[in-house]
Length: 373
Image (cartoon, rainbow, N blue to C red; front, side):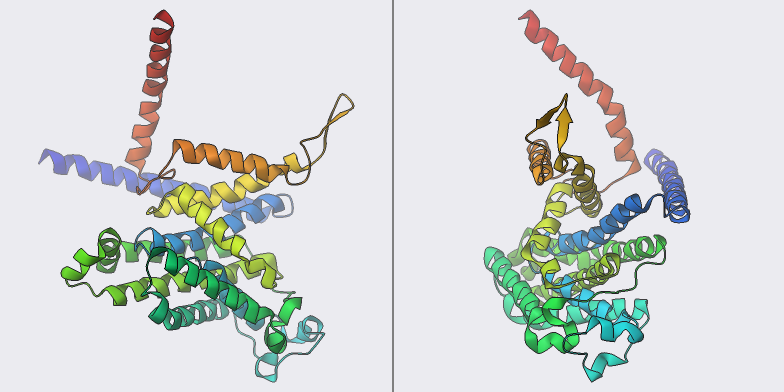
């Protein structure tokens, strides 16, 4: 009885705190949206972070919760991005975009609303995942990673191929993509996508994914169809990765094949690892940390002069050196990522805050004892 009485107030308190947090976040977004001209830089960082949060959670769904190491995210993002770009660029300005070889009659006058094009991009990515999943999901560990990485590069090569000029505009890329009308557009879409994936992870399918991750032989012995659930996780992850790619195209307003190089996948993997493999909130935190960190350290790329002397280290590219060092520090102190395989909770945050004074006290006591000895 005592436990039940304790849990109920804690749950109610968590719901109240969550509601307050949502209201505060909405108020901040509303303020930024109303003053977009003044806070354009901050808005762009938030929008990019939200987009990468979706693809990081999608990658974590596959890698952290199902145990399938895939490196094909850049390719599936490219599919979603080009689908959204092709079908949302206004018909009247398409001749200015496809100025070299013209546009195919099949898509010349076909324009879709942004939500429809976004879902279509996700479906195309999911369809390709369903087809290539049949052979590649029979591979294990590193072999699966190499295969999906190769598929990603094949997709990028096909997009830039001369035979695709009249559809993807080949190596010239696509521009004049309509942007977001409000910061709430990527925020709401990202929240919906992540929310759906959280519901899936907490469902019976999610428990099957976790069982496969822990021990696929034992999972199969329990009656779980390994290939069916691996294929399902691969398709769902690719669908939301395609959605994120479509959002990225709208955010950037122009894309080309170079946008979706292998380094993009590595960047997403970095977010997942920093946040914690097997943690949804960790992936979201990792996406914001990596994107915000890369932007906030830009001043290291600018020349620095002190008392008439130019500091030689401050030059283009030094920002990434500092960023890499900071990442190494994080990994050294949080080897399983910031969140590990745990999720954010208000009770956990409260315990962390209450425990901080004790940590400092213990450190001071240890130093004092060491000095006396």
